[in-house]
Length: 252
Image 1 (cartoon, one colour):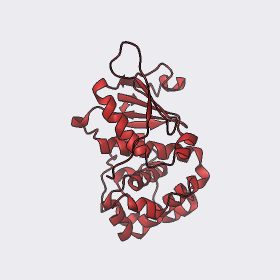
Image 2 (cartoon, helix red, strand yellow):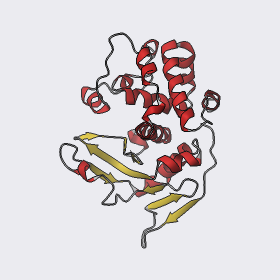
Image 3 (cartoon, one colour):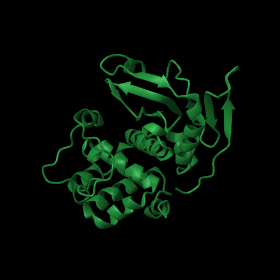
C-alpha cells in the first residue's frame, strides 16, 4: 500500500473525555463519529424487520480506524468526497435483520464496524470496507453512470443473482476472497454472485485497494476484464482523473 499524505483535521473534543468522539476532515468536510449519536440511524431502521443495533467503537480503536479511513479517502479528489459523503459513523459492531454487518450506507453516510485486529478488522479490511460502501453511495447517487446493458451482456447465459448481500450471508455464500475458479465467468469472489450492486462494489474495492492479484485476474480473463472496464468507466464519469492508468499505479 502506498503511503498517503493525510489532511489536517479539526478535533472536536467532548469535555472530560481523553479520546475525541468526533473529527472533521478539513480537506473534505466529512465528519467522523464514534459516540453513536441518537440520530445515527434513520428512524425506520430501528423498527422491525431491520431492528438496527450497534455498539460504540472502543476508544482504543478510534485512532487506528480514523487513520485507516483517511488513507482510503486520500484516493479520491476532495470534490468527490464533498459532493457525495457527509458523515462516517464508526462502531464496534452493528446488526440489521439480526445479522452482523461490517459496513452499510445511506445516500450520504457510511457506517463501518471495527471489532479489532484479532477478529479480522485489519487496516486493509477497514480501507476495503470504506471503498466498498462508498461505491454503494456513488451507485445510489449516479445509477445512470453504469452501463447495465453492457454488464448484463457479460453475465453467463441463464445466470441470476441471488438477490442481495443479506441473502448471501444467510445462505453462507458470502466469501469475499478472490476465487480463481470464478474468474472465467466474470466474478471475483463468491459474494459477487449475490447482486449486481455487490458485484460492482467488490470490483470497485479491488480497484482502489490496488491488489496485484486483481490486475492478474483482469489481464487473464476477458469477462472479468469487461466488467472491470465498465466500473472504470463509471468512476471516470464521477471524476475524469479516475483512469485505468491511475488505478493500476496503486498496485505498483
